[in-house]
Length: 409
Image 1 (cartoon, helix red, strand yellow):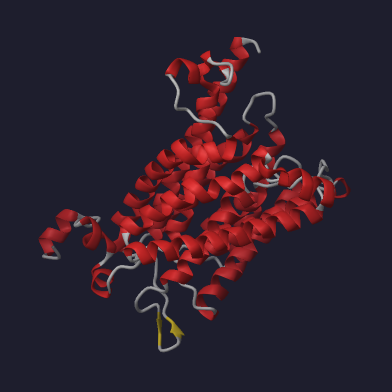
Image 2 (cartoon, rainbow, N blue to C red):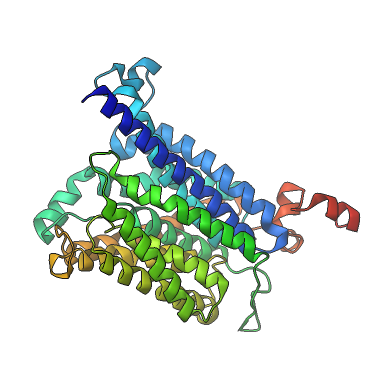
């Protein structure tokens, strides 16, 4: 390849990695605005520390499991001096890009188990999920590991399972891992008293909105730059992402009766759902996919919280788990040429692959968080939880000067 074109691809993918990295700030502020004031510092620290742990575990273990590549060689080789690595450090920015995807999984889980999980236990779970479990589904779907894509999907079901930007690999997997963790952890104190659901209001709608905006902006790097090269880039992905986002916003606005939390999360629901088929759907199909996801999120968050008494603080199972699952299936519907798509997919492959990814995520969530609970204890004590994760874990609140002035600390 022409060195200038190779350099352009490196820069292109590096910008994608930076955009997705910025999304982690969105995860942080979305959680900050949703949790109570006494847990805001913990939300910020968790997302940043989870990112660091995820990157290190993915560098030494996870990326090797997914792609059979290790960077434990001299810098000259891994920068392109060895023929096993692409020139100008392309392999390195590809790792950076995919590491930001891997780190999104514990960021998703963080929102579901907020306000009552032990910090050290969650860090241990992050290492296990990103280092050992997530790379299995990533390698199967995106690298063809174990020949499952060929034998199960292409040969038996008519087409390989398609997940262009991670509706299943990242979002559904992360959301169902979170469900397993939430069920193992149990609800927050006072959330369900005497059989009734006691609503806990968010601490800051502006911070929640800021988190949503950061995620929306970064998502165009998440989706569009999943092409991983200038040659593969498609404006269709950008337009489909935009249409799905708008569909999710308006559907959540109506279904959620103007609730600002639902509106801002509706944008994310649409973007979660369109990831899988964003490169092959018609924009109208993407709009419908996003709108359906907005309704799924609003309805299932309310049902799971109020009727099933699942204390999912940020609604990550509904948002990522269910909307991601829908997105994988929707790819097999709206990706068909009969509905204006580019084709190359079958509904049977998408249905089987999507459900399998969700089941795998739930199993991982239950097993990993059960192991962590047995080893470290997963939950704060009742007294620590009442005091709040900020003071109990980090010994400082979101407004230290005010805490000192009022005698809170």
